[in-house]
Length: 491
Image 1 (tube, rainbow, N blue to C red):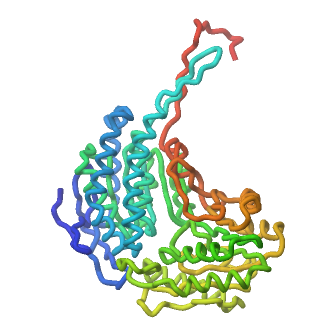
Image 2: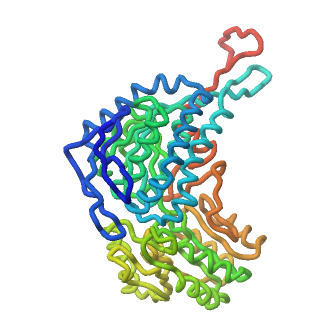
Image 3: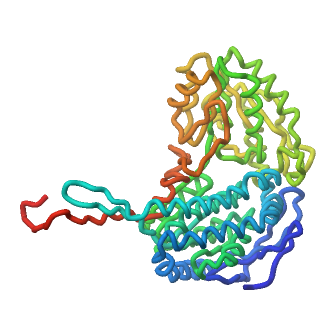
């Protein structure tokens, strides 16, 4: 492979694409900056039409042999892939903390172990889904999960490693070949994944990386008719464009999009526990799609909850994400800082009341104070639209009926949190129109469970057999149990 590398946070990583088992450079480059201090980390190869074509051609050429393997035969490749991630654990942690601003502690204890599991779990899961028979009186139906073909995987900058492997696991385990288009603001851990795939012995063309912007590289990728599937995590506007481009070729899309999820505090909630969980919504500087960002609090406990949550927020450490004591790191990019500040300024101009925060944080140019706004109308811009920064809103309600109307009163439906007496909170949770909701908890996840949203929050599900089946063509092989003779009366 091309030996040219960048040195970032003490680790070597290639700035180039990975196509057909080789590093491929580009004459077109883009700058990558660190969100912590805005320093230049290096120049990254931008994918041109030629690179996209080469990657898809390589994946298409590799598909027949890779798809012909059984799930049992593919499993060792994915297990080795996972093991190679483990061997480079520290590099993955340092690189993503440096180019995406993700907390180093979160990478060490959550993301890297989960990335390994994403590959090994689906490799194991694939063993259970081959040639499933359905017995009827007339025939045996052999239900096959055949690989779909060449898959495009497009990942966001807030969790590039976890989300890339979450999609790679089922796509590769099902027998597809893939092209990953990583986020241009945080491409380094995806590049390191290519080294892991290479060391694991994945055949050339099975796994490819093409870097670049969504508007250029991504657009060329998703418009190609040779694709069999597109899996995207990101913004609603980009998803609409992808769906339109892929739809022109009738290519199915899985779209995991944004959220404006309710964080519900009922009158019978454990206020201190709810407040402690509420402070977690500032994790990753609020750049978390599944966070509960709209606080809906019963009027009778509003003051007690605000006081309790304020006490937790005041103790949050804002700073360098590589510091073990840091709890809130930087916003990814200057453009995202401007977006966050714009939401806050417009809300205040529209009559919102500031409970805390509301300004850049003195730690650095891309840091923003954990913020809470109240005195908001349901149709306010900041109530209705995803900010994707450390900015929350708080509204009150006086009845369950009013609460449900407010909770369901946006175009999003990704997640939610509901604190209250278990029976009451569970009853409320079942009425919230969303893809998932945590009762008296937050962040409990399992790969066997579905993850995804409704309405503008997306189409399809990640996790379990839901995501695995997206990457498959389901075939029914019908074998009759007694001799069959054709007849025009046959229906």
